[in-house]
Amino acid sequence: MTTDVATQILVIFLSVALLVFLVCGIVVGILLIRVTKQIKNITNITEKTAMKVNDVVNETAQYVAPVAVAGAIKNAFKMFSKKKSKRKE
Image (tube, rainbow, N blue to C red; front, side, top):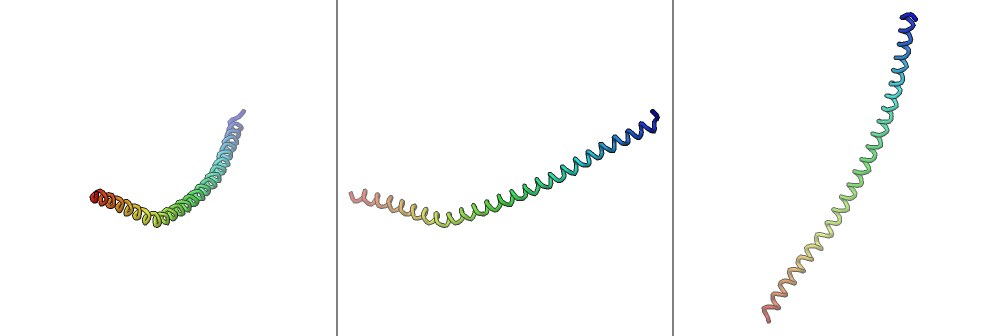
């Protein structure tokens, strides 16, 4: 075998290896693009869900706060009425 044939075989082998790595790189790139799009969709859905939960919490807080204040006032009246009944006895 002469050096020209060995060189040609080596060039063919390296060309095939380069082609395989190039195709693998393209496939990996396409898969990464798909995964990043899915991640973007998931983050958008999660953000919308968090906003809805925040809205529900804010609306619930508007109704719960007056109830809590009313409960505190009720407890205060109970304490004062107990003290007044003890004083009368």
